Length: 441
Image (cartoon, rainbow, N blue to C red; front, side):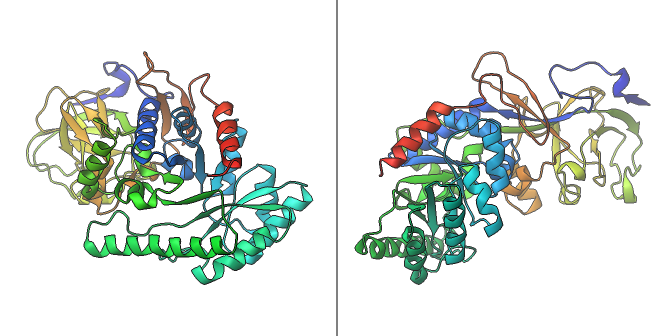
């Protein structure tokens, strides 16, 4: 016996298009998390990190909600990401986390982005672009205190800052670093993080002795902001925590301590849920082996549900091999064979209630059941960042707002979240934060 979605019972809510699969992005959760992080880290300002299309959630919608909740800055990795925010009407300061290539500096200036630089040639290319545009451009200088990815070596920072302040077209607006193991709980990790902060303080002191003091100092990522108060300084750059996920499950206790210290009773709220509807069900006898490779013998006569999400959408083939589950009817159900490009099969056991059209939750809550991005990461032996960023562009993001009465939904198209009407810009917040920055720390 088989049943197809075309003849299935209808379900409430769902995708904006014909494919019954979608990711819900809750803007109320973004605002909640941003406000919570501001409270924990005060008086430091909040920079909402929205690179990689907002960690797969939709950069414009997340950025707008974070600004509404009091974030002063946004941060992205690429010039193209910053330009997309500007095209959406977002006027808040946008920090580029890596030094752009020389040929991109003209676009940096045109889009009014705040670049990071850490080489003399990079600072020179930025100065040339600023002069040509007849503008004075703020630049942040990054120092490598131990991450060893990008940044100026501590002994070279003064030279880079000198290149920034050597002309009249650039302003030394920020000095920053990045913490490599702020999410570590081992004593060695905590010691290394303290050493990074000490190195940063040493560089800052050398520059201050030379009369070179930036408007903003920043070092904390999400883990630093939550677990290392010394790193908060003037600005905290929060990415994963903004999306309602801890940098590591091991930091739950540290987060509770930070929240308690700020007088907060609530925790972070996950922003994203990944959902679909059963597209087909069939009853198969014990011993049948569904999907490619026939790798999963059914232990009993079972209802096998087809769900229209596959490895092209961010469900890795390894999720079956590692014992991954999904929620159907509020219960965790195992995959019934190899993940295919567009679909997965789910072993629902001898449950006659499972029908085509039923909701399937891959990440999120359903009834008494719950599956988080960290649950996926644990099964896959990776991190929650990779799980949410890996949700593919074929999966439409549907914006909801659980804190504003009836959900304001919007189909965002592939990989893009659309904000509800009236929530595309926060020019006042952007202009206010820019004015604050001009006033110094």
